[in-house]
Length: 169
Image 1 (spheres, one colour):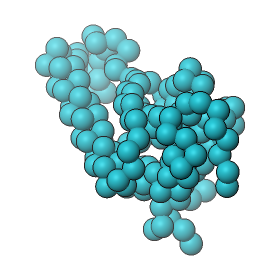
Image 2 (cartoon, one colour):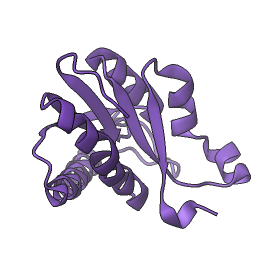
Image 3 (cartoon, rainbow, N blue to C red):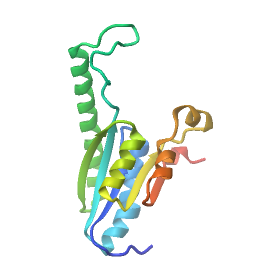
Image 4 (cartoon, one colour):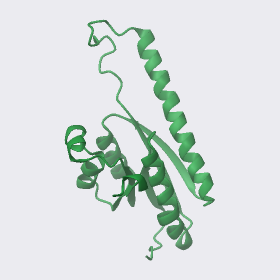
């Protein structure tokens, strides 16, 4: 596989707290970045984490009919901040293990995962999107949906969906 040398390349890897996304990141580093890096040292790896959107209205009622207080909102924001830090730290460790010297950018979005991922890929003019697959079966995928499937239909750049070895049958 020969990669053309046309200036800076941006490869977006969607990361979350799952083993599957970290495996996809590792796969990308070993199978895409290492090849690309031989031909050009101007590749940027963009680690993208998408957190759920904040409650639409902080004064919204929860299921039990109680008003969300400022404490609940602050706790939720703190939880997501720690989750983002944890995921990005794990992703950084995966990058360091690969021993490939590459520029890494970290981006955090909030909202519907497929919309944020596709929007970021378009905004950055990414050359490739890499995502892990949770390996959901037909029924679970039908109920929960598939972010990778939705992104594959929307993005204009090449996209690689990496299966975790435990999900390969």
